[in-house]
Length: 333
Image 1 (cartoon, one colour):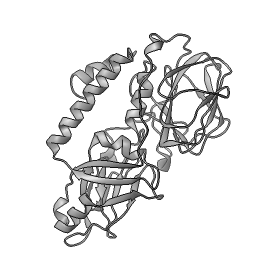
Image 2 (cartoon, one colour):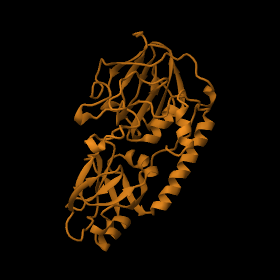
Image 3 (cartoon, helix red, strand yellow):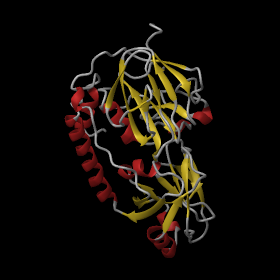
Image 4 (cartoon, helix red, strand yellow):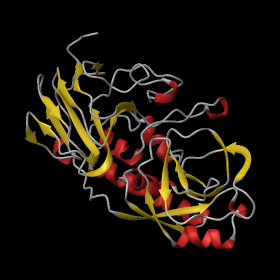
């Protein structure tokens, strides 16, 4: 390996980890899916660089790191706006940016959004564990030595990239994350455990994202949701976006590092297309829930997939891994 093809970590930021689309197929064995909290932002970062759409990126929370490129390449930043600087000059997010060997990239405190993503052309040269490069910190599995990045770490890159086709197209419009959001949910597997008043409370009242929130789940502060009997159930499987309501009645949305099973009743499940905006909420962000049917959620999901295909065309997306497009056409992504 040419040691010059690398990214040096000068400052790691508050918590920076390697994440990709997730570790699927092993929940029955107790492995969490993990992966990026904001899958949209991860995909968009890779669209801009012609990477396979699920390629691993660096996920930074609240405050980004400082990195030095040791080779000519391209990179992109998406998700939270961390006021990035390249050689101390401001650069935009959601664009492909060229870096020269020796260039310094500095990401600062997030001024809008929570999770920021750094992708490099060709991706990071990191071994997969159970089919994924994602880091699961609690299990010390995957990513860079199973841990968050530290000062002095060196990340090897897959390729040195001196040229990126259609660079003028490599830009995506993205608005600000909002201080109050509406999140749509479908009824959960234990919907019937809750009283009519509890269901109305959940759908009508305003909740606030608690500071006690992490990659495992977001706790919400607000009116308690009442159960018919008690919140405990015999443990069953948990999907991403499941809204558990423990005995205190305060909902909690389970996310990337969620446990694979749980013993609290689940009133609903946040639909897939609304998860990215939820995970980008800072503590204190107001959240309202509204009910939709499974059929409505499916329509919204298909609409989102069509928009992603249009985004691919607009950005001249031409990945090395064409198998992904085929999977999209077949409807498996």
